[in-house]
Amino acid sequence: MKVIKVLGSGCSKCEKTAQSISAIAAEKQTEIELIKETSPEAIMNYGVMRTPAVVVDEQLVHSGSIPHREDIESWLQ
Image 1: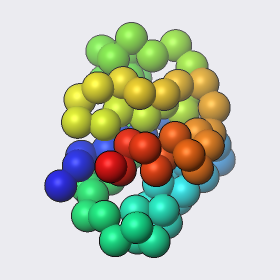
Image 2 (image 1 turned 90 degrees about the vertical axis):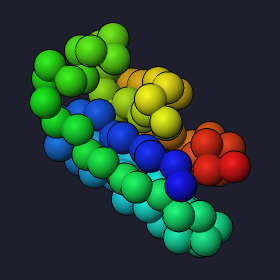
Image 3 (image 1 turned 45 degrees about the vertical axis):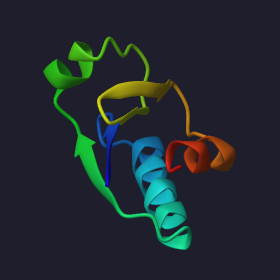
Image 4 (image 1 turned 60 degrees about the vertical axis):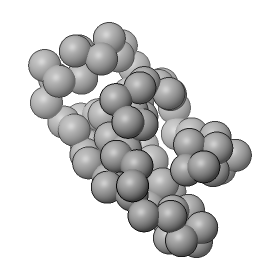
């Protein structure tokens, strides 16, 4: 199971990112653990300057915008 963290303040873009990842994982029948991380300290620990950001299995894979479907699908493989 992949552990995916959405880093951000809880803004609409962060929520949309989390919803998209969740929906695509369900479509693909991929089991994930989705964590919404809103702590500024935790976000800074990943070196993120722009949110929303996505961390997959402790690797920063995206930041600064809502990710595209193709990106999300590649993270779930």
